[in-house]
Image (tube, rainbow, N blue to C red; front, side, top):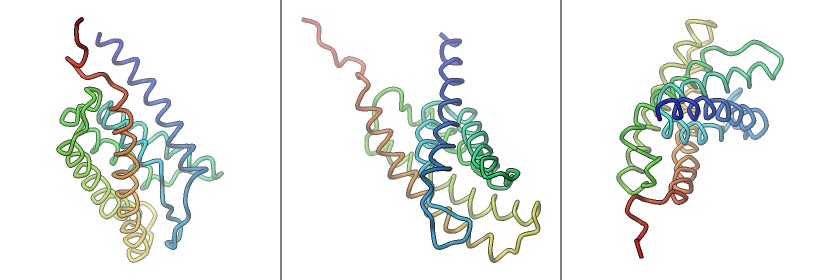
Length: 183
């Protein structure tokens, strides 16, 4: 059974990275903050990290964000690539508590998913990304912390609202244990 789960996780990483890329590259919503978009790909990252855990979440964020940056013709912006991976890992750390694959996404699990997203996005975009921007690229602090603050708010909202709706829709498709009656 473990081998089957490994195969599912590898497939989820591939599909997740592809969806992350497509949404980030072609469905990004421009924002008033330069070089910062409202990013729907964090909803998919939240769903798949919650389903498959921190390794899958980290790889989806890392590979997907790298592909987005490469598709623009330049080199990856590593500080943000690393932050996308960080977000996936942090949300994935809550996967065992969420147990999305069990088919239950009640109020308690919605709260856990919300907390996971807030922690991941706020720490990622307000701390990790700006600090790496300054260290790696010598970017001005006021610029990168403004970008990070906007990204934290918009990505948290996207992750919680759209990601939560995706999880809710997914869990509605799962038959719960003991839900079938014997006739």
